[in-house]
Amino acid sequence: MSQRKFLIVVDMQNDFIDGSLGTKEAQAIVPAVAARIRECREASWAVIATLDTHEENYLDTREGRFLPVRHCIRNTEGWRIREEIREALGDSAVLVEKPTFGSVRLPAILREMNGGEDPAAIELIGLCTDICVVSNALLLKAAFPETDFSVRRDCCAGVTPDKHEAALETMRSCQVSVL
Image 1 (cartoon, rainbow, N blue to C red):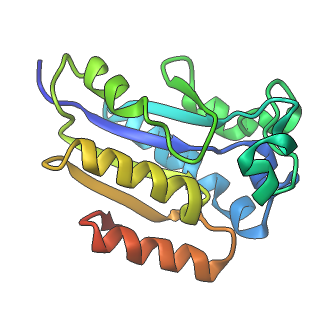
Image 2 (image 1 turned 90 degrees about the horizontal axis):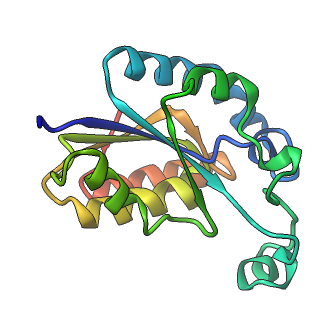
């Protein structure tokens, strides 16, 4: 099997776009993210979308004590992937729920989807650049040190514009190309 390219679409969920933790920057990237998903699907990339997934007891968790804003509670409207993004993902995208910033399951999922081989390339897009995008990028970079990595700045948004830029710089420092 030839090595595949993977697009990881991070947490493009309603609560991060215009819900309890939404921002105008997150709202602004929706069309670009949907377009990039379509481009990658047309080029036969494998597409994986992550879902930040919390339970009703979120505020009692460690994360909930540090970020006391209910968000992405399983099966709520805020937890769902934004409609435009879901349409772009189509039926072939793999959905991965994650209870925290980064998914420690992603490396095994990518390797399994790629016939046991390391991916040829991984690109990350989505929300939030300074929390979940950077966490997943660094976890995946550690698992696949010889894989080409990139993140698209126009398809990501941070909690603030300054934090977005700081996260991009952190990823650059860790040999992730910022496109």
